[in-house]
Length: 72
Image 1 (cartoon, rainbow, N blue to C red):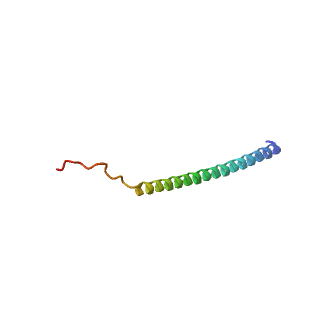
Image 2 (spheres, helix red, strand yellow):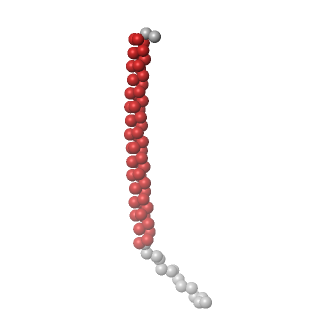
Image 3 (cartoon, helix red, strand yellow):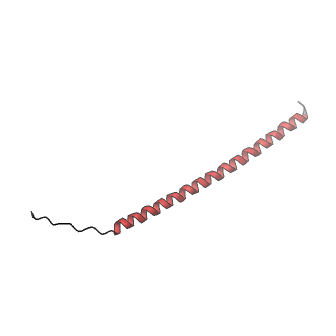
């Protein structure tokens, strides 16, 4: 084969590898962001659940409206 053609093909291969490395770096960054966002959302949901359960526990129970006249 022509040596110039070999060099051209090698250069194209290097460019392909560089693009692949950049794509992997970008995908890893977006995955990390997605995981961090999911963890943050889970933390917010847990905090809200805890807050609502505390509020529900602090409510007073209404006294009975009328006592039964029949005693057993």
